[in-house]
Image (cartoon, rainbow, N blue to C red):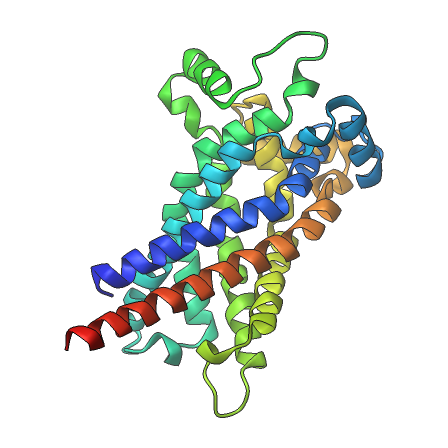
Length: 298
């Protein structure tokens, strides 16, 4: 992969990440609140009503800025690393063209790519989760409701390393999750590719479908780990991942590990569909402009 190809993946991933945030942020806020404070909300609809009553429409978009930073950063790094990891895995398997790689090989490349994107997403997702849970954490007191205010508080209390609270849980979610994410995406693209065509010829509707299925596959497989990650980041829990998970099981039961699954699934199909639609079309546009400029120069 050339530096220019990596730059295209970087920019396309950024555009895709931004589109995914604007589509899916309200349901993400509901998901985090239900994960961190299950005793306060009697289901998704109850959470929707209470957010609107206490915070208004803006409440659904709490943490949008760090979420935007997180998703733009994550997806730009993810898709850039995905292209590089495809080359690396392909070289190990003696496969030159990524289009000729098997689905498990592509999924493995996506899993490896998530190692790098997790480092990018952890600090901004930490701030996002704390902003989304701000009202529940500080009932009856005035708290500075801003990205800078929350970030300063974290650094003051825990230093710069505090911004990476939950990194282990993030890796534990992302690495296996993105294996199934890209397995679902690439597998659906293969199934929807007409005979005699390539995956690059897929219609926007097919890309939307593949992206939505990828997101659903991701969250269905790793949701309990996301609940644990949210608890660690919202409450600053210093215990190990197994310790937090076992406490949830003992005190709240197995069902608690799936609190917020419904809003997450409602969010992920349109959000991930928007991500991939924006990513694929931005990439196609940039590649076509590059070819056009090259032919004019020649």
